[in-house]
Length: 230
Ligand code: C5P
Image (cartoon, rainbow, N blue to C red):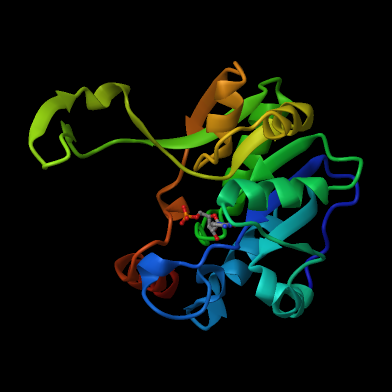
């Protein structure tokens, strides 16, 4: 069944999904890899479309797969699909250009975090709505972290109490994200990094273990297990 997005919602979600997924091994682009019978992208979009505040979803697809992705998502939700770029940041910028006038809150969410729960989209959006320019979901770092040299010799131990592992969806006031992308120099791995460079203060909110990034074959197996055990 195709999910209906809220025409009065104030949130647009950009989904960079144009990565190759080299670390998953040979096969289709990562967002199109199967997870319990459906692609990672379909899992992600279904969870986004269920969020009551979401009015617009824009997916940045692998350029050669744009038509296939449009077809794949046709029965899931009313989604705009654009060709992605060579780097994640270019894919996000392409998706941002396709957002129509209206939504003033933009969430950016990696298709690779296919099991991020609907509630996380609502909580990040709510934090932006409450007056914060930039919001990221985070988890505490549980491992001890070492700084090492190029030859893998330990240089020191970092105080993990001050560290956070950062997830998506990351949320932004639209004008703030647009200004940061317009001024961006080199590609960064997340959008909060871009706005930080712009002097914007970024607020952390609790993330979710389900928003893990599916990167390696182990992550895919873990995600299958989570879905099976519900
Ligand atoms: O490379 P990484 O796994 O960190 O990618 C994070 C997200 O960015 C993934 O959802 C991937 O599909 C997306 N991406 C993209 N365009 C690229 C590279 C990555 O949309 N050129």
